Length: 420
Image (cartoon, rainbow, N blue to C red; front, top):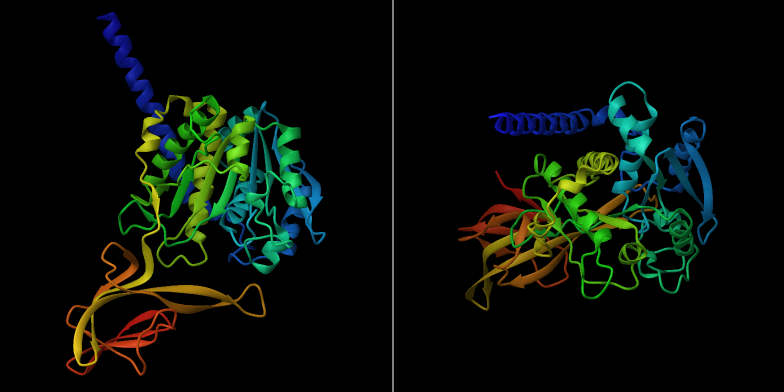
C-alpha cells in the first residue's frame, strides 16, 4: 500500500509539473506582443537596422556586446552574450541574407531577457544554467541585397571546408573558441514545402543534422533529436500538423553537419510558410516560443526524458506545393477539350528600395498535377480557360476561368479573384 501511495504521489507530481510547463508555454505565446521588437516589422531590414538594436543592448548591464568580425564589404558582425551558466549555447541567424525570420525572433528573445517584469523564475533558471551567445545577421552583405549568398557569391552554409569567406572563418572561429554545448542554426525555407505527402504547409521544419554519411546517432546528435521532439510538441498546439523534419543526408560542406561532428549539439530550424503571413510575423512568434522553451529544456535538462523515436515520427519536409493550384481546368486546343491542371508560383521582385518588393507570377507547370497540392487550390471542373494568348510555361499567370461564356474567376498576376 505504501509503495502504491508513493507511485501515485509521483504521478500526481509529474502531472503537476507538466501542467505548469504547459502553462508557461501558453503564457509565452500569449504575451509575445509585449516583447516583440516593433522596429522589425518586415523581413527586408538591413544591417543598419540591426546595428541600432545591438547598440541599445550595449547599454544594458546584463548584456555583453562584442564586435567579433566584419563581412566582405566591411559591415560589422556582432555577438550579444547573456547569462553566467556553465552550458554554452550559440545561436546564429541570417547566414543566408534573405532568411530573416529568426533574426526578428532573436531580438524578441533579447527583449524578453532585458525586461524585468514577469517570467523571472523562468529567466533565472535559463541564465544561471546557461550562457547564451547570439550572432544576429551573420551575412550582412547578403541581407543588404536580400539575397542568399554573401558579397563574394558564396553560400556560407557550403563553405565550412574551404573557408573562403570571412563570415565562414568567423563562425568556425566561434566554434573553436567557445566550444558551445548547443548550437542553433536558424534559417528560412520555401513556403512551398509541405508536411509529408499532404497539402499542409511546413510552417516550421527541424533537423538534427547528421555528422557522418551513415547518419549514426551518438550522444551529441541524440540531444538534438530530444530537443526537437519537445519543440515539436510545443508547436503542435499552435500549428497542428504543420511541423516537418528536414532530410538528414550528410552534407560535408555544411556548418550544421560539422558542428555536430565537432561535438556541439546542433538544432537546425527552418521557417517556412503560413497562409497569408507573407512577412512571417506569426512564424517569428513560433520561433520565439519554440527557442525559448528549448532553452528552458536545456537549462533544466528536461529534454533528457524525451524519446528519440518520436523524432522519426515527424513527417518529412516535401516539396509538393504550388502557391496556386487550379485543378481540372478545361482547355480548348484546336477545337478539342483537354482537361489539365495549372500550377502557379509567385516570385518576389525587389524594387529600388530593399524594403519594398513586388510579386511576379509564373506558370510553373501544366498537365497532370494530381500528386501536388496548392497553398491555395480550386477545383475548376466544368470551367474553361480563357486567355488572349495560349497558356504556356514560364509566362505570367493572367487568364480567366469561364462557364458558358461567363467569367467565373479571374487570375491576375497569380491571384485568384472570384467574379461576382
